[in-house]
Image (cartoon, rainbow, N blue to C red; front, side, top):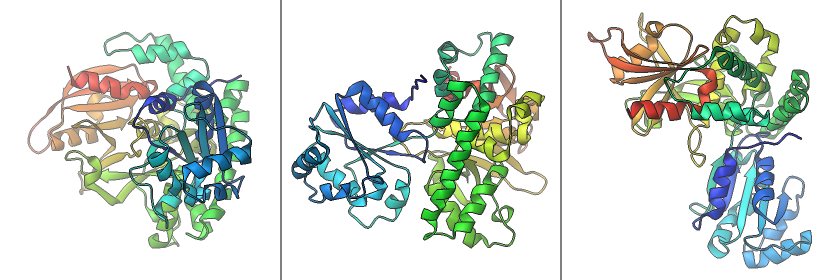
Length: 460
């Protein structure tokens, strides 16, 4: 039997024991494992779980009509033939977007019955939050943002605990044996194809078969397409379909609506892209001028790239197989590096605090004969630094040099497929002067440790 560990379980445990906790709302796309996470949490920490799925039980919302927890709980106990004991029972309200009035009533549980543990989740909750016509429980609920399983969670699901522990304990300067480097890089190749959707990971971990995994992924892609019918009243179904089908080919490139369909106007395609972003199937990565924090304060919403939900779904959409990765001279060359850029973007997107909405940015300069683009820009505290996903020597990272020189920054992070290195370097001449900086180069398998290692180096 495949057993998972989601890092979000640690956050849920802390939430459970916190005196100031509020009803928790888990936000994330379909198939990222929201319900499964709650089941694991309940099994570990509670005597009983009462789960109500509002898509399956369409009339269950009537039990919450009074808005009074003192009235609601006896009705729930009678309807579901169970006792609800604060501290022993976890009340799980799943697919809560199907019952907006119930979502609104969460405020009363916080005010009148804070001792009861309540978790809710919804795959298309973002639509309700954006278009709500009810009184929002502002300040009376808290959020947990969940994405696909990360690479290190994938390792644990495949029982590669020792490899995970080695990654977690590694420090710059320590030797990385070639055999271990090759094995860790091989696991990255597997993750690229399998991705982080729990059902796909389970299929691969159980049978070791990329074919069975691909069947699951194809089913998930079909599920997303079925969801498009729910968007039809907000955007033309065919436009949502066009963007969904085209985005996998556009990863790593500045997004232009003309790349989707030259016959369509951008103002007609834009609502469809926004809906897919709301559903968290796609993630826009906006250009920021990156002069300081917060990075989002200086974004240009007209300039952006797009990430797909999951690297496994990306590879399935592109028709890539394990042979494509095995035959490539360098993993970064597969699909012109777009898969690796998706992988690092996906990891960075969910590397922050789980209570913060996941956001990611990049930087570019468009000037005649002097254009530059950095794959991602990240902030650790007040430190802003560029992140590149590229092969090559230090001196060939032209855009990284330009960014560090223009922004007067002294640290850069690069992911590639070679052994890790830490070097002191000088930028190429920019604006008439050179600039000293430290470059940390990490193999792709250190994606989950990159922020820890970056923080440690910059504090030296």
